[in-house]
Length: 348
Ligand code: SF4
Ligand code: SF4
Image (cartoon, rainbow, N blue to C red; front, side):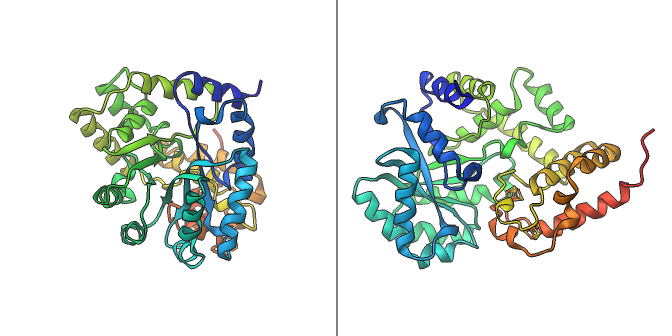
């Protein structure tokens, strides 16, 4: 049995039946994979969420054409939750110009979408406009205790709360960044709550916000599935003391100067030089946390030459795809400079 089937079965056996996919996930293979695995269950027993890739849209007819393609890939007749994927400053014009909402509401009226929403990675100003433009059943926001301030998640959350739009949470653990805490941040957590894990703490923080329908956490193996389900089997909202500790951990992380990359890999889909952007940012973040120059040098040199920062031609294509609005070529140049400084270090 494939690992994915084992993960899905464990979820279904333990009451976790909401599955979230998207057109572009895992090199556009995610929909095929989850569709095949869920095919083993009755349709009414699982909830499937999918997303419309705004970046692929040229005309209104593309919205329906791609939607039908997604139904086929997922082997279903309808989606329970369907979103305009990743509305932000770079995609909002396309989303409007191709009348995405108009086409999707038709699909909803045809019974092919139960709940219509959007996922969002833009500014509060854009969000204020989007929530007023149409009637939405839900929205998906990046909510975790670090981004509450860093990407103004708090402000975004207040905007949708004011419109009574239910929220599904994405990136509750910030692409693993809130699981692999630095020693200092972990010490803070463990000295106060020795029995919790960083993952459980982060998931509970996200789930404790009011009006949250579900918390989505990307999981890549059965062990992670079991851990996350255990967290929610014994679920309790965060206490005020725990909220304070989360604030303190967020401050520790912010002081470390890490890059806010969630490892979504959207940038890599458009990079003409196949630069391994999330891997470079991950090892740079590790360097910022540990301050270990030799480890930074060794890990950086373990990347293939073709995927290193100095191969960037500054075309800026990646910036348009980054949901975190990072200045990727600028950061790559900075990391390359830092690498040049440590490149002559010799192992003792
Ligand atoms: S700016 Fe650099 S990293 Fe970004 S897409 Fe272009 S070559 Fe790739
Ligand atoms: S740099 Fe941006 S687009 Fe690329 S993996 Fe990180 S968050 Fe995603």
